[in-house]
Length: 119
Image 1 (cartoon, rainbow, N blue to C red):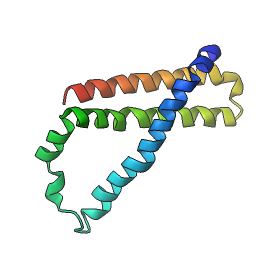
Image 2: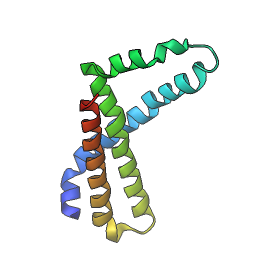
Image 3: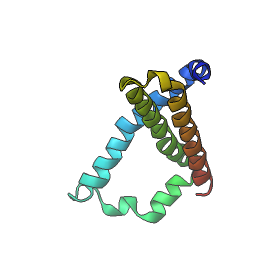
């Protein structure tokens, strides 16, 4: 399993980097708008009503963005947990832990794809 993880490392780092970007930039902005700007009255609450949000999310571009917001932060979390496990003297179990975490990330990504398709 360790050899497979080493071969897949560039792809895993690509997904990790994209998840890091989305988690840091886009989700932070979303939380600021929904959590602060709307309650403070800076943004009109009707900007995020259900019909507008559903129309945006069910468009082609909106589906890609929703899928990215679902799947990529999962890969970021899986990679961080794997690194944390290695840091706590889990280097000898890295193949098993990495295999489990990345398999879980694949399953969550597939569930996200199903959820986005059903929009």
